[in-house]
Amino acid sequence: MTMVKNSVIDQRYLTQFSELSDRLSPENLHCDGEISNTEAKRKYVKLMKAWKRLEKKVGRTVTEEEIFNLTYPNYYQKLNNSISELLAEQSMRGD
Image (cartoon, rainbow, N blue to C red; front, side, top):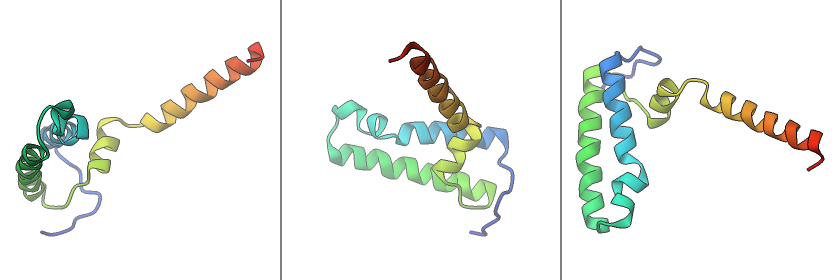
């Protein structure tokens, strides 16, 4: 597969990658511990095959981190701002 850095991912593929990423999270992959490790491994293999098919459609390797950053832009900046505001409020109250 050709590596094309920073090529734009079409919105329909971004949505599909995002849904796969959600399904690959440990709590979803293991159904909150309600399925065996063997079943979870089967799910993982199936989901990763779908991920690889999407990568072929976009013509490059795509990481879950990239999908997270595209799906939730500025997430960490907003989180840091919220934490800073909370700490400032606590400081003003003397907590």
